[in-house]
Image (tube, rainbow, N blue to C red; front, side):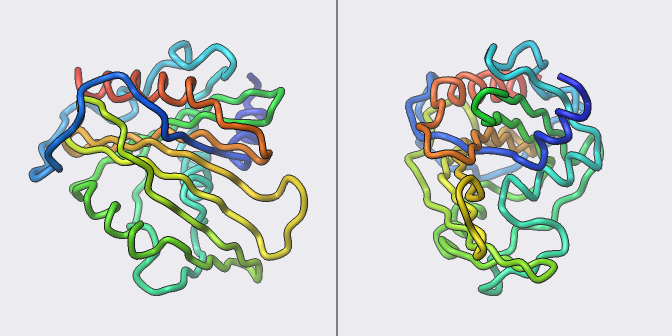
Amino acid sequence: MSSACALAACTLLLAGCGSTVTGHPVSVQQTTVRHVSAVLNTLLPDPAQFPARYPAVVLPPEAAAQAAGDLNGVTRGATVRPDGCAPSEQQFGPDHTAIAVGTDEASRATLTVELTRTRQQLSTLREQVRRCGEIRVTRAGATTTVSTELDPPPPIDADDTLALRRTVAPDVGGPGLTQTMRTLIGQVGDVRIAVTYMTFSDAAPDTTALDELFTTSVRKVREA
């Protein structure tokens, strides 16, 4: 995929899933956060490990910063209401945030792996989603409604996991403008692994591809 297509994929970004993932059920929430010593961008799955329909590229830092805002529906510099519902401040760079995006050109759907370095337990995000199921995001005079629901957490060998489904709907809408996402998240030590399937259509999400890539991504971090 050309670099122009890769950057175009950033501006489209994501959707995810809630189906069964192979692995072992997680019965205890994460209580400590250990350090994973490997450099973060070395823990991304290789582009060849993405499902075949989703040729992938690793994003450079500036494109990764743009993509991160697409993933959570909150772009940099936006105002979020209610108070206390904005995502945690995120740092960028090869050992802070690493993102790879695969794009199905036929459907305009994307599969994105985002790795972030964090000392925050995943339970903090879980509680924020419970408090902030619907938020209003405003930037440069444009407002969107971001709605997020928790799905059953995927059973996989990680310190903690959760699953989200999310829509980002602009106030000034129209066909093909609402993002629909499903995201599987796992945490292994201080590395958070989020894999998101995103589409702008009403088509059913490719949960098989999402589950497969999530399993691959968590395994690579766990084995580091």
